[in-house]
Amino acid sequence: MGFKSYCFKKSLWVFHFGGASCNNCDIEILDCLTPRHDLERFGILLVGSIRHADVLLVNGSINHHDKERLIEVYNQAPKPILVVAIGACGCTGGLFAESITFAGPVDKVIPVDAYIPGCPPKPEAIIAGIVKLVQKA
Amino acid sequence: MAADIFYFLVFPGLLFSAIAGGFLSWFDRKVTARVQFRKGPPIFQPFYDFFKLLLVKETILPKHGSPLIFLLAPVFSVFGATMAAVFILLPLFNFTTGFKGDLLVIFYLLTIPSFSYIIGSLASGNPLAAVGGSREMKLILSYEFTFLLFIAGIIMKCGQQFDLHSVILTQQASAPFIGSVSGVLLLIVGIFCVQAKLALVPFDMPEAEAEITEGIFIEYSGAPYALIKLTKYIMLFILPSLLVALLMSGFRFDGIHILWSILKVLGIVLLLTLIRNTNPRIKIKQAVKFFLIWMNLIAFIAIVLIIFGY
Image (cartoon, rainbow over all chains, first blue to last red; front, side, top):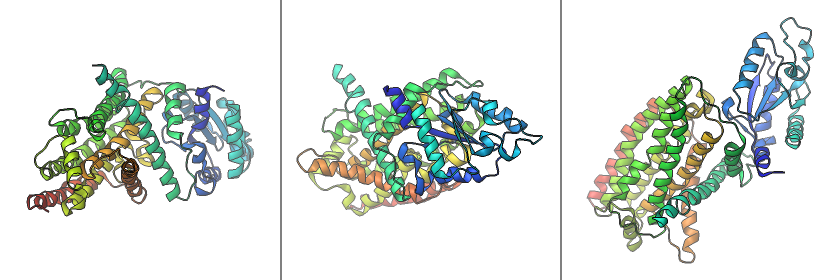
C-alpha cells in the first residue's frame, strides 16, 4: 500500500447529496458524525463544498430533477471521488421504483463504489459500509 | 545567503512551523472533540489531510474567473505566512537579526495571507466566494486597527523599542508583561485579534461552513487547497507564538524552561479553541462593532494605564 493511498484512506471528506429523500437517511448520516459514533476518529469530515470532497454520499430516490443535478455535482467533483449510495431508495429505488418521476437508482446515473442498504440504515451499518469502502479504495 | 535560505525553508521557516502548526491543528481538533464528548482524530490527521490534498486530489480551475491569480493566491499566502514565521520565530529562538523595527514588518506580513485569500476568492468567479471575500475585507478593516493599537501598547510598555528580540529581552530581564493590569487588558485584545486573524468561530464569517459553504475557499481543490491548509497550520503556530513573545517573555531553552515554553503556546491555543467552541458565529456588523468600539476601548485604556505606569 503506497503512501498516497494510505493518506487518502485516512482522510475521507464527505459531501452529502440528498435526492428526493424522506430525511430518515439524512438523520442517520448525521448520527454517524455526532458523539456516539464519532466518525472523525477515522478522519472523516463533512464538508460543504463538492470541491473538497473525496466521498459523495447519495441518498433518497433520484427523480428527473435530481438526475441532472447529481450528474453536474459528480462532474464538478475533483477525482478520485468515491460514490456511496445509502438507503433502499439510493440502492434500488425501494418504495419509489415504480413511480412515474423515478429516474433510476444511483448506479444508473453515476458509477457507485459502495451500497449501504436499509430503510434507513443504522449508523452501525453506515460505519460498516465505510470500512468496506476504505478496504476497497 | 545559504543561512537565509535555510531559515526560510527549514528552520524556523516553512518545514518547522508547518510541522509544529500541524500538531497544534491536531490539538485544536482533539480539544474540540473532547469538548463535544467525542473521541477526535488521530495525531497525524492534519498531515494525512495535507498530503491527500497535495498528492492525490485533482485541481479544478473555475470556468468563469482568472486561473493564474486563482492559483497564485495560495502561493502568496504560504509565502507571507512563512516570512512572518521567520521574523517571529528567529527572535524567539534567540537569534538576533539585528533588524530594528521588525515588529512593524511582522504586522504587515501577517496581513498577506488574508489579502491573498481575498484575491483568490474574487478570482474564482463564484458568488459565494465573493460574499466570503467581502466579509473577509470588512473583518480586516475592523481588527487591523485594534491589532496596531495592541502592538503600539507593547512598544510603549517596553520603552519605545521596535524589535521583537529586545521586547523579549526586556521581559526576561524584569517580569513578563502579563503580570500587570495593562498586560492583562492587552492579552484580551490580542487573543480576540488572533481569533479574528485565524478566522476561528466567533469571527469565521468569511468561511462560514453552514451558511456559504466555506466561502472564500469554496472553489479550491487539490494542491492549491493543500497550500491554504498549510498556511492555516503555520498561522495557528506563529500567532500564538507572537502573543507568547509579546506578553509572556518568549521561549527559554535551559532545562525545565523548554516545557514551560511549549505549555505557554499550548495554553494560548487551548484558550482560542475554548473560545471557538463556546461561541456562536456573529454577524459581520456585530464583529465590526465589537472591534471598533469595545476592543479599541480596552486597548486605549491599556495604553493610558501604560502611560501612568501600571
